[in-house]
Length: 395
Image (cartoon, rainbow, N blue to C red; front, top):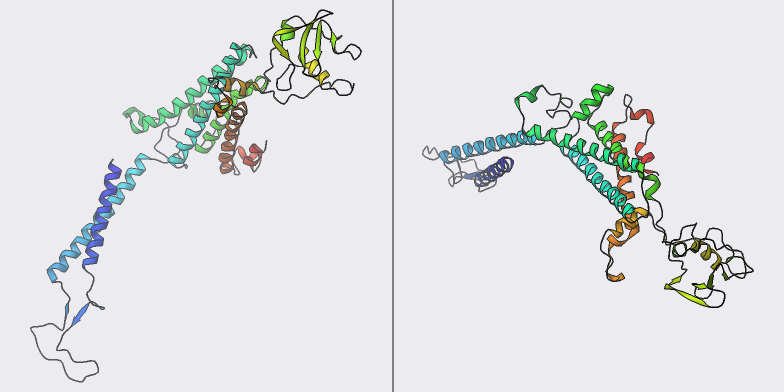
């Protein structure tokens, strides 16, 4: 509020200065009226010796008005300069430099990092809980425990940074002895101080942001095995007790055997007692729009049905409709739409896969931006090599 008040005062002073300057403009070129009794140009006639009228008189302004306008101009200029100085000082206090990094740059960078950290953490927690509830995939206890510990660490880092800015705007007398970030008035975060004391690390604002960019998303690595795991269609044949269909897929017995019969035209599977075929309830079809496990009977039937002209079945038939665990769990966390026309981006598995991948790539991109700015002869990043941003983003 003080900043806006000072800016308004400076603007008012500038308008007053402009108005006074316009009022003091001369009414004729040259700024002077020529006396009517003055000799013409080129005339040798001497001017009259009148003493009551000056030779040249300023147009339309008395000496008192002139002095008043000059005083007003000087006062307005002084006020504008003072207001600009006070505004600059206020901005300096309100948005101090964090070491050699501008306040807004440091703040926006940190906000983006923690915002995307919250986004990736929410996805990881949702996938872990829903996968366990739906029995699609169960992450080991150690993975869940490590993820919980890392989320607590992320919260502590965020709270540490928030507390630093809070104590800058609400200082206490005992805070005067706290370590600062370089020569700035902002105190050093506890995490920064611990790294400096425990590991003798020489950090600056850029390397601190680089550390956050690399540390915050590390919990995604412990989910590496499970996040890309495909979500398989539950096997109805296994649930019905038809585990071994080796006899059925033999070329001399196909499409009847092992108590099953397959319609090669419609790809429907029937129960076969040797004389009659009975439908499953509900009816069972093998389709290319499901995702069967490679150990399931349905997968072997799909391979055999795709064989043409008596050829041998494919060893690993392609299944284009298989989706990763992360996309399926996130899309399924929203209410199922009544029709396909009502589906939004929230119900699209690929959108969630790409969003999670984009968030992780953003961390590497931000780390690369900071590292490129930090490179030099005496920095840790310079040991890795130049063009760090290109290396990090070229995955």
